[in-house]
Length: 111
Length: 239
Image (cartoon, rainbow over all chains, first blue to last red; front, side, top):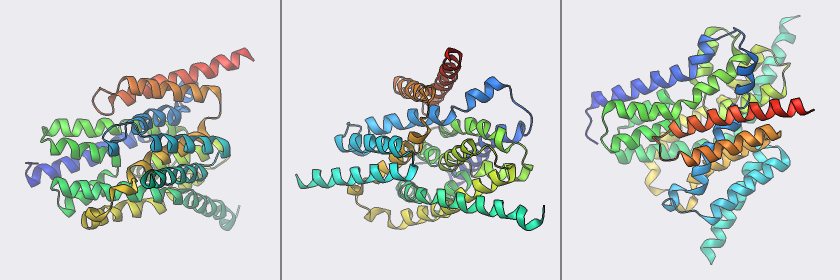
């Protein structure tokens, strides 16, 4: 890395301001004004529209294995989703996934 | 209404949020530690690494910026790459607006600073499940979720800077993040429309994986939102 100290701080400051403005955008500008029903309907799908696309590459091609699909990680992802769907509880899903991940890694290490 | 009864729900909302935020400490610890490790390897000072963690407070974007900096990319490209990763948060902001738009400006600014994946997703799930919540309770709940998470986010970067080299790869800390995101999304798949949106999000994101960071996800998310709304409307008309 060959940036000057000033350049590095410029990057940090610009990212701090830019990220805040992105997060503040609609909350700040729209405020209490009513939005059209179609927009509200679209926005209700925001979490399920963003997260699956964000996670899918991380599950299929984990950086830790150099981008190679990994059976243990695939099983842990499936267990998280399965337990989460079944119990409808975030913490239960996390526990299910973590237990599967570490059990799988442990068994792989022993084999 | 007396002051005491008006305060009670807000207090409850804070502790409800606090409790719901606690599990994400487990997610933030490895993620933030890892940033400390990578930032030190890249040559950032303690102050600079902490500048990222405290001022930018967006893990994925921080990693994207570092990656570009290690490659000595031009400044505008570093900024573009990192901010593109954060563009999904504009959608979070829009999605929170109907629930929090009536709050005072400074409260909305505070929520905006703390509006990251875990706080947003936990809060929006609560707001949808309890439409009767007051605007004040919603803000307080959001801050409650952020309270246990944020200090760990700050502190663990420092730990990563000093102790990072001794954490074994075998702990597979990298995979805690995907597990947390999947655990958050699973309970939200409550209708065929939601499942359809999730499926389109995955398919389009994987197809567009070659695009610059964040861009493919943004297109995938927009396509998924339209799909979800369309399927929902179609299902309602069938009934």
